[in-house]
Image 1 (cartoon, rainbow, N blue to C red):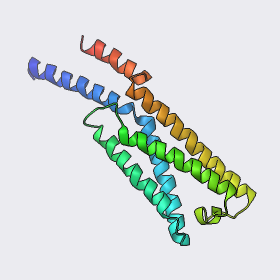
Image 2: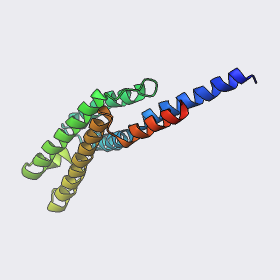
Image 3: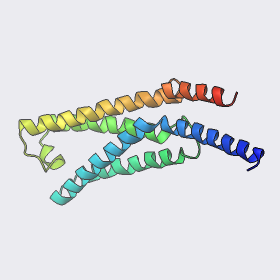
Image 4: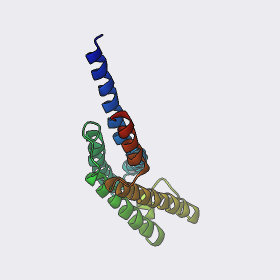
Length: 168
């Protein structure tokens, strides 16, 4: 192999490493999206199997989540720190969880929203806990997206250090 080819291969490796590092800034975001996806899919399936007319709630959340997923997939090839659809998804998820907490606590709609649970205090506490965790996770991700947008995350500083060392 010629020296020029070796240099080109090494440069490609460095560029791929940097590209992967930028993509991995969103790793926590993608794992949280996957968690919410499967949670909403299971909720949708339970609503469909029980014949609840409120199946459109998790369905709408899943459709919005898919736009966020598509945005994340696009980031593989084109780095950006502007995850607009992802931000809107997590804001929406946070709001929906808040509304569901209120409806679950103070409304008789609980059995339609969660037909797989018995309408008792323990079930309501379980649902409120899961929804509160969802709100907490959404808040954490929104903070993370804010950090990434403003290049204030630790990964960004590591990437810059790596770029300085490898391209110097």
